Image (tube, rainbow, N blue to C red; front, side):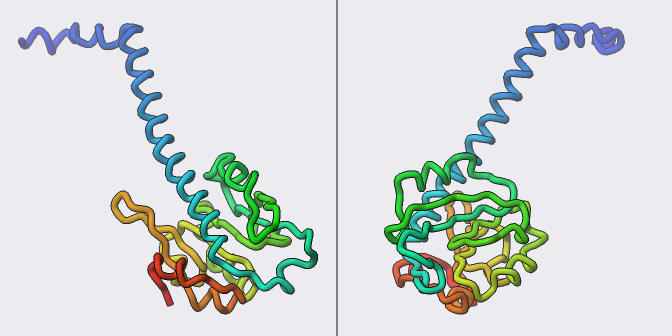
Length: 191
């Protein structure tokens, strides 16, 4: 037994090509499995966001200058959705308006929006973002911890394996947006 550990003969089989290949395949499978869970999470979030817009009213005079104006959905930061947002909105209208999905990296690039999803990559900028859109009829949505307490309208949270959401009703009203009772009823209300 002592000889087995002293001359390290037992290590040689570990470094054969087939063993390295098996290890590499295992790493790839583990990574794709983790990516798949994330992909499923963002598919679900894309569906939720599309449903949220059905239960929110924007002030027409402030938000839509003409009858042909599109509904602008903006994603701020690194895009976790892939093409899910375009897929969700391709044949969908929000309040009888075609949807345009736009991606920006800085809040300074925000020109017009009806809904704004703020990704986790902006977690350190959340206060600045809130100040930039405060009082404007832009539905703000994120997944950043405690963002609803700071003034974001809808914040995704995860409890166990369940996706939930919080709503800052006061911030929503200050932005001239009206949320349906049906949406408020399903959320945790933050004031």
